[in-house]
Image (cartoon, rainbow, N blue to C red):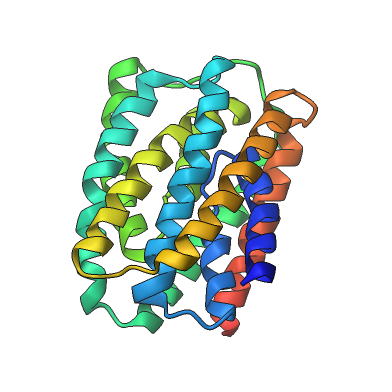
Length: 248
């Protein structure tokens, strides 16, 4: 378990820099160590997602990087959709869940790699506040349900959405961290409601992600990393994860 916790600590540093909870990597990692996907991996991944995102979101909030105009509706919708997806997960075959996970992650990774080649203006947000709020509600509820079912926070889909709307990558990552906090914890409650729980692993991994995410968020907020580097890092990691699930 100590090896697993050390790996989770290092991953928390990386994913907090991207505004993500990291369950897309935590989950296959726990699977590789022999834990069951539905009863242990999914709920533990949601817990770690929420803690990583919360720790990072606090740093981003203090630095003024979170855009609440789209972040609030995105957060509310995702938080309501996540427990619904978690409840449905008990009837979906595990292999089907893994293949859906791989497909969504792979497409998102490819999109971010393409985005990394384009120059990024400081502010070029598209749409009115009302249209962005409506889109946040629609996408948040759908992604939240999918995220709750797969045991992830949904940040890997929220970041490309906000980038496509014209948000700078750092603002997109910071705003996503806010949404991931609530979608992760609400999805976790859905899993706990059906008896999915592993206290020893959850406690040790929680300490690892809180410390690691603080380090990563402070590094990202320090402006030492350029946005295109973040996009490329995000895209490559997602493609590797998708390949791992498809070949498993």
